Image (cartoon, rainbow, N blue to C red):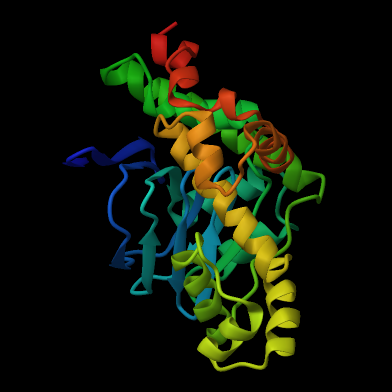
Length: 299
C-alpha cells in the first residue's frame, strides 16, 4: 500500500509473514501532528534517517532524531500522537506481529534482553526503548531502501535484505548487552520547555524566561532538563540546530547556507561541530553527494 501527497510518500509492504516495512518519506512543509490508534498488538523498530518526530504514546513522550533507532511495543487500541518537523522526515520502520517478535528474540538468543521484556508485555502496556544508533553503513542501508533500482519481487527482496541487515546490527548489539538506556517518561513542564525551544531555535529565551513561561523554578528547570535530555538547555538548542542542519543538507541546501542557519559564521567551525555530532562531514550528506552514491545510480 502506498500513499503519495505532493513530495511525500508513505508506503507499507509485507516482507514476510508477521513482518511489515513502512517507508515514510515526508517532504519539507509546515509542522504537522497526526493521531493514530493501533488496530493490533504490535512491536516495531524505527530507523530514523532524516528529521525526527515527537511522539506521545500512552503517557510516554519521546523524540526521534536523525540516525537514532527506537523499539516500541504497543497494545491494540492504544492512542499515539506524533508531530513531524518542518524540514521533512525520512524513516524506515519494521512492524512485527507479537508471534513474529517472540520468534525473533527466541531464535536469536535475546530472551533475557530488555527487548524481550517489552515484547512479553506488548499486549498490556506501551513501552519504548532507544537502541544502537545508525552507523554510516546503516544509514546507507536505510537510504538504499528509498532509492532501490529494482521493481516488483526484486524490489521486495532487496528491501527485505536491507531490513535484515539492519536487524543483524541490533541483534548483535543486544546480544552483547550494550543497547542504549530506556527512554525516560517526561514531566509536562519539560515537554513544554522543549517545545518552546524548538519553536524559538533562532532566538531562544534565557533560562529565567523559559522557566517563567513553563511555570517552573529556573534552578529546577536546569537540573530536570539535563537529567531528562542529557544536556543543558542551550546544549539542547545547539543539538537541535545541528539536527535541523542535517535535514537542510539532505534537502539540498549548501554547506555554507546550512552553517548560517545553524548559527555558525564559519563553515569550517560548523563542519568540525557537525563531524563531532554525527561522525560525518556535511559534504557527505548533501543532496549533491547523495545523488552520486551507488544506491542513487542503481549500481
